[in-house]
Length: 178
Image (cartoon, rainbow, N blue to C red; front, side, top):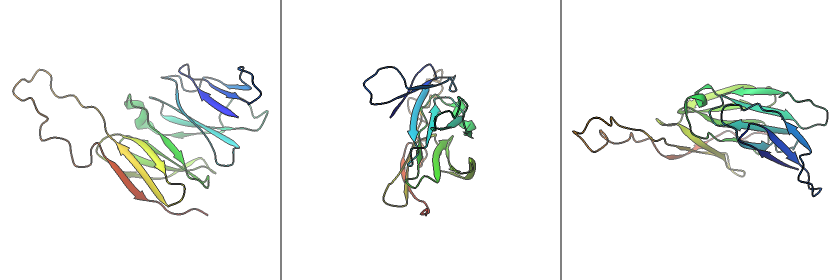
């Protein structure tokens, strides 16, 4: 089965039966700017969807007849304030989801649909997160375009340049899950 997000905010689920018609269509939940990421849980029983400028990641149960409402939604309110696509990743054992939220990283418990922890990862927006499938490591990417005062012609350079943890890639140690 393949899940495809669209700019109109819907998600189509397609089987390998050779048809271009969706097997199931998840309704518009990401209304602001479309679906930018879809990811199945490691067990395949759940689908997670996120959108640009959307403060929620929705969890959908993949069992037939589960309805057109998400099982739960994970809040990341700072995402609404940026035009960037903010990624998320699921731990290979399926228990936790990590995502950027402003200059922080949030960790959610997927069994309960609740936020477990948040930590500041950079001075810019954390737009990329990726969990290593073999080692207890999380990679984060950060950076955002910043505009100076366009009416101030006294200086052509950034004032002091970016802070040391702006526009960077970092590696973090995360706990092993059973």
